[in-house]
Image 1 (cartoon, rainbow, N blue to C red):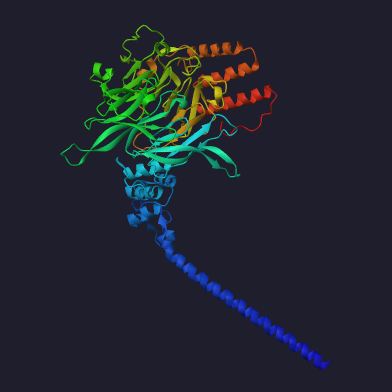
Image 2: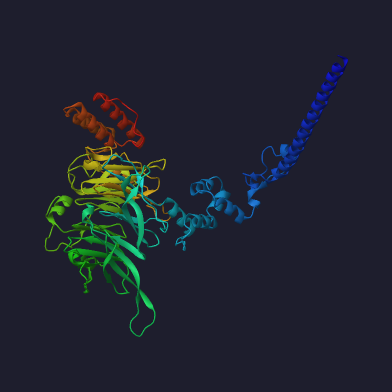
Length: 618
């Protein structure tokens, strides 16, 4: 028993020694951790002096600086080498670089430097060799390549959402586009024309589906402009006419080559070139449009000096291999009015519109039916002299236009929209269906970004106060061409389409709605403020939206609206009429959205349909 107790005490002492050794090891580990922490703390204290100071040194000492003397003196970011700051900022996304440039004056100058944008442009487009032209070429090139995109939304099918096409890596921004029957053509700012093809691709679920604009090839380089059949239906767009510059060999006995403008004709289905016509090297063109039927297709070419030349080809014989001479003649608008300098052109199948550098508008109408729709009379129409230009009477300088089959839209320097022509489906957006034989202002729309006129409907791309884009439309809504308004509307209403932030132009076909996204910092419409004298003295229509600026006129308009609602036979018709009236009223975009959503809820409740969640795209 005594031996066992002594052995037990010896085991207890061994356990105590083992516990002391463990405690010593723990103390050593804690001591080493404490020493490491002290080293890190000293390093942090040394690096504290390198922290970036947000305020400039010229602004004086930072508040509470005396209390921080023991923590080190902060160093301003301005003491860093400019190359280092530019190199660091160049790794930020373009959106963050723009936001950083709005924080203070120093970062505004740094973020606006061409060195930063040169690095960003090299990162976004490694194959871009030249930065282009302009005051800030690298910044322009970087933003063009960052914002480029082609979006489309099909009118038919189960999926009615916005999709994005393939983005060619070689493209230097997007300047303009043209959809044809099977494909889409895009011209960039470097003069390269891309051929975006529709193809069968494999979906994520392993299914084979037909997808739009998912493959691309380079059609040609050195292109200035391109055009196709001016009709709205893409079925007729069989050929693509490309205005380009090509190097031609010199004359016999001379060395070197000369740059000459030419028109190349391609098949839109395959991209094969079938015809080419070359002009004299002394003639330089900048725009091409088409007008007329296939057998008498007239090509109108606008020179750099503002003169217009025309030639006639027969499209039915373009695929025949032969060589012949085509006569290039001066158009009558340039012969009769030699002092005019045309800035741009627009055309459809039977009419042409010219805008001069002074903002004047001249018209050519080639058929009596279209002339009657546009002007309401045939009094001045001469079937023997269809090229005689007609001047439109407008109150201000016109910046750009849109030309449909039998109606047109004009935008002046003050951002006002004027519509003219046939209004059978309400495509003028005036709130009624009465034809207009002269330009009529749409008072509740101002400062649009883009305007488009189709066969019997019109679209306007506008920007709200928070810089978000929205798409408005009016006219016939059959076939889903006005998303959210299948019955159409006689006034411009907000369409249920999600618009890209940098959308700049649009186009609508029978099957699809296209929107081009590209932001050019040097080319954007700059509107002037309307003088107060014109605001007060501008005549207003009697019952149009925003008809009168006095309370009496507004009261009479509201009475007319109530009488129109009372004349509707059913509750559903009254709801639809109320939606149209909300679109006529000069309300803010948020207010119109509120009233339209409320009316939709009431209409669904009256029809016995549950309210359901609101559409996020509405």
